[in-house]
Length: 304
Image (cartoon, rainbow, N blue to C red; front, side, top):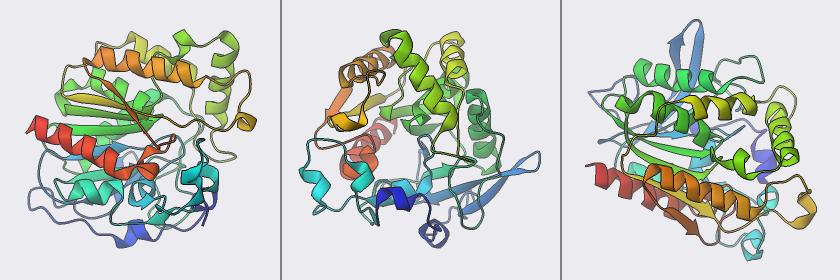
């Protein structure tokens, strides 16, 4: 199947892949909807056992299944110098990022509202577009409701990077380590032109289409800028080396150089490094799951 069609199929693997039970955290061991209060629930899938727990925050419109799939080694898009993810034939794999990390410690991934389009135990829908603070509050509520104890190593992809940025600033007591995978860096707007920023903010409001997740990016960047400093914990930023083909870009698209510079600035704010990952587009967990998993495990070991 193509990656585009992947977003609109019934998710089976999430339901069928169980988590290794932990006597300390029995709720978190059961994949499915977790009640976070106010009549809402969020889907959570955990795999593996051990500490610290790794908590993954997916990108805009993405959800847990992306961390259990890969682009096969023989997929033709791997031969392109561009990010051709829309043509990829992704497949479930035990070598995907989540199950690979699960061989070292427990790792949990969740679905935000309006990301997984169908299937059982979907996260409760909310009004879209929504605000960044709501996503931070949801993560905090989910961690508590699922009984995930201790300080966690957080991993964030794309828009998830903004969620993690604000969460780490507001709740450093929850954070033991940080991994940013092709993040939406807080520094992008100061590097972009007014037209680039306007186009990006507009795209975020609409997300991946009708009834899909959308975000008020203007307020998101403002909220991060107004928050306390980032905590100094073991951290890393991962940046891909592939960019979409020219026909998918406009004069209002952030350039690859701007994105890399913004990620350099984020890494500097963390006291970390921005690692350029060869052979990877934006969805790095699909292109290079072993590299992503190795970076996460390295932070886990540094925390330990």
